[in-house]
Every structure is written in structure tokens, then in C-alpha cells.
Amino acid sequence: MAIDTSAALVPTQYGDVTVHARDVMTTGSYRLDLADLRRIAEAVGQALADPGTDGVVVTHGTDTLEETAFLLDLVHASPKPVVVTGAQHTADSPEADGPRNVAEAVRAAADEHLRGAGALICFNGTVRSARGARKVHTTASSPFGGGTAVAHMAGDRLVVTATPRRYPPLPTPPAAFDGTRVEIVTAYPGASPDLLDHAVELGSRAVVLAGTGVGNAGPGFAEATKRATENGCVVVLSTRAPWGPVVPTYGNGGGIDLVAAGAIPSGDLNPFQARILAAVLLSYDTAPEEFPETFETYR
Image (cartoon, rainbow, N blue to C red):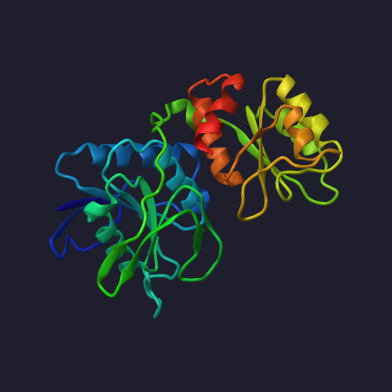
């Protein structure tokens, strides 16, 4: 078997798996922009197109790994697994976890039982779907939660326990993706809807409103949402809660009123992954009126 990985300094052989390494970029993930994410997606697509490649491993900083992994999942049309991993401890740390994570990611990418599983995240012996995953701890060896846990290590054996639901793959975004502006505005006690208005004034083509609870926001946000959508800006309603879907339930400025004003519920997508989906759709010049149906499919 042959696996492509973006890690530069990795062994060329893991058991019967041959690894071909390629450096795409060496940038702290907190410094990445949408152009970088598109470049990673294109590199992964090129690796997948090689008939000699059985899977792809991407090494990535943990800060924004969930956004890149979700983009890779959105555009993943191949049955070959794509596994994203990284490290929580430096290479010279007594607790260095990078080599183990890479070795386990290679094993996952080479496993025939994970064909068709899309893009995955592998850390500390657990493999989970990219969709729905998010970083939940700043320093723990298992920094990611959510998504669907699809496999785990049992000694030196990978045990596959589930297959994620797959969605129709989207085309890799064009260069227009690089400059697509989608802002996130968070609701909290006393939050000003002026921030949403300002995002529109700055040229945002979409705004993700990270509401409270099941998708709510305070006074003035429904009116600001209506102003934004009337000006052609897409407003996506997500939640700042770490888990659970957006379920418009309350009036008096809550989710029911926000949706009535034009907001599109993000379903189970957290604000950061909802932002990636919105940016991808906008890069194709998707009309605002087409967003509800598309979000219904991918949320």
C-alpha cells in the first residue's frame, strides 16, 4: 500500500505501508487563511488522483484543523480515506505525541474498512469524522471531540466501529474562495446587533450568527438580520453551545424571529464549519435564495 502525507520528516515505511511525503506549506495553523485551505485541498486532490495512492494523511496544526478537515470532507469525492492529524506536544517534549499520531493516521488511511468514510481526524488512538468535530481542549492529548467516532486503536490493531454518513461532494472551490468574506458574530448578554450591521458594511457576503442555546440572540438581532438579508447578505444561524443542533424555538427575538427575518439554521454545524460551507458556496456564486436548500442538505 502507498500513502501520501504532507508530513516532511516521517519514515518511508510503516509495516507494509509505503509513505511518500510532500511539504505543502509550513505555517502555524492560526495564521492560515482561506487561500491556504484551498491550497491544501488542491494538494490532497492531486494525491488522491494518483492511482498508486491508497489514502492521504495531512499533518496540520490543531488550532484550525477542524476547518481544514471539514473543507476536505466537503470536497472529498474519492473512496480513499483522508486522515488529518497533528501533535499537542513539541517534538522535543518527553510527551511528544506527533510520531504516534502520524503512525496511527497512516494505519487508518491504509485501512480498507475506512474506504468511503470521507475526511477523518486521528488523535491519541481515536479516529473521528471531520464533520461535527471541534477542538475542545487546549493542551490535552485528545484535543478533539464531536463528530462520529469511527475507529480506535486496540493495542497495535485499528478497530473500525462505524462509518460516517456521507454527503454529495462539492467541487473544490475556485480562486474566488480565497477572498470570500464570511464573518462570525457571537450572541451574549448585552451583545450589540451593530456588529452584524458592521460586518455587512465591511463587505461580508455572509455572516454566521453564533447564537445562544438552540439559536437565539438578544434585542435588535432579528431586525439586523432582516437588514442584512434584504441587502443580499446571507445570515446563517448557528449556536455557541459546543454540541447540539440549532432548533428555532423561541420568539421575542429568538430563533423563530431570526429565521422569519431570513436567517438560515445551520443544523448540527458549529459556527466555524458553517462559515466554511458558506464560503465554499459563495465562491461558486451561489445565489442567496439557494442557500436554505443547500444548508438543508449539508447540515
